[in-house]
Image 1 (cartoon, helix red, strand yellow):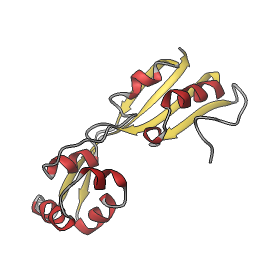
Image 2 (tube, rainbow, N blue to C red):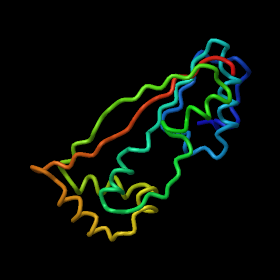
Image 3 (tube, rainbow, N blue to C red):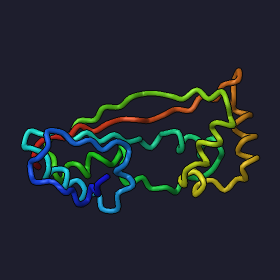
Length: 156
């Protein structure tokens, strides 16, 4: 594993760099993107997968009547502006999708496995489970997802 903010390779080393659902964890995104651009060849392509502001967690928080305070530092909504700092051509590919949950216990394990939900939701776990179970229709809870990817090329 390497630090995207300090990539240990020479300039113009790669035809392609992929950052899949991780840029929102990076403390200095501008530095990271500059490093990606530095190690890409002039005709190289950067693929950055990320979620939009209507992903599973955001929809769950709204479903529970909670307010979302989490600020996604790299999303489908704000990523293009950040990429424009170092790339001249940016395309976005969205993938409309949803998750059909048939086992609330599996969903509960998933949402409580990370810090985002635990930091955003003030309701007790048993209340969250009851609300989500109550929103199931014919044994299924539909959760919209909001995945996508940026495809960035060229020197800005």
